[in-house]
Length: 79
Image (cartoon, rainbow, N blue to C red; front, side, top):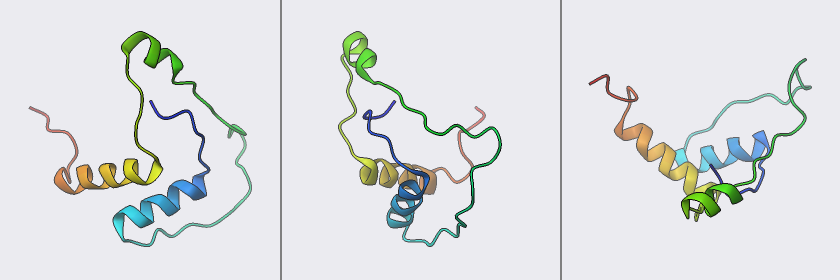
């Protein structure tokens, strides 16, 4: 779930570069066959049904993701 605000792939790359302090190499190319033009989700149902709403923006979400990855370099434990 997210905030309901859409982000481009380039915005995601830039936010992860900022969070990680590392350059992410990328190349801008045309859309691949089968790629969707856009994809959106409305988080209103989660707020209504669960009483939960995302409170952080993209930068904070990427910081949290990077921190988790650093603390869990092999991913989830199998135990």
